[in-house]
Length: 166
Image (tube, one colour):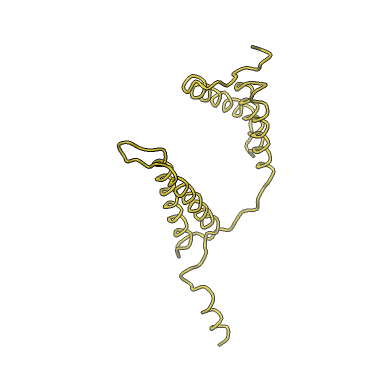
C-alpha cells in the first residue's frame, strides 16, 4: 500500500521524460527564443511593410520558442524514443573553441585568407572523420564565401592578406 501511494505522488505515467536530449534542447530553444523576443521589445517593431529594428528578432524569437515547445512536447509523448545524454567528449570542443580564439588573434596580422585557412584546418582536427583533402576543400570554399560576402559584398575593411605581403 505504501509503494502504491508513493508512486501516485511521484510523476504520473502520462508525463515521463523519455528523450532527455530533446527535452532539454527544447527548453534551451524556448529560453533563447524568449530572450530574443523579450530583448527585441526594446526596439521599434514597425509593421510588415516597414519593419523596424525589433521586428525580425522578435518574430525569430517567437518562432524559435514555438519550435522549442514542439520539441519539448515530442520528447515527453508516450511514443518518443528513449534516449539519454551521451558522454560528453571535450576534446573536439577544445579544438573548435581554440581555433576560434586563435582566429580572433591572428585576423589582423595575418589577414582574412590565412586566418580562415588556419581556422578551418585546426577545427577540422576535431572531427573523427578528419581528412586533409576535405579540410582543404572546406577552407577554400569558406574563404571564397567570406571574400564574396564580407570583402566584395559588404565592403568591410578587413585585411585580406598579411600585412608583411601588402
